[in-house]
Amino acid sequence: MAGLGGSLERSIMEALWAAPGPLRVRELLDGLNEKAAKPLAYNTVQTVTERLAQKGMLRRTPDGQAFRYSPTQAREEYAARLMLDALTDAPDHGAILARFAESVPAEDARHLLDALRRRAAGGGPGA
Image: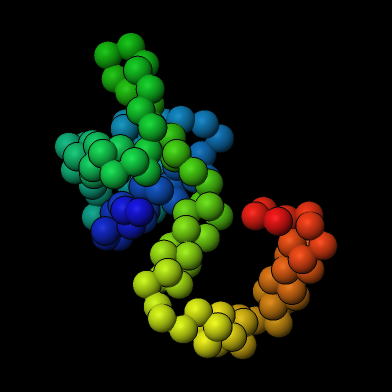
């Protein structure tokens, strides 16, 4: 799975995950520039957005003479896939999972434990 290569890719994805619907590059640029110390150029955002579409991270939908862009997966799905990719590359899954569980804040550990209990009871993905 392709990952996010740089801070602008991450910023674009975060903006699109937070958006109520697909955005044109101009709308995306306006939102990014509201928070930027140095304004971004339209062509820069368009190029990076196209790169994300080629990676399969964004879907582009024609809208007149332009395109609207939206994420192909939710933020949570993306993060879970990154975690699974990292786990797949390691020889000792148990040690990594244990270290992860010990490293997360207590509230997150409770969420993880609840999800594992649901899965074990036959109510979660892959059950």
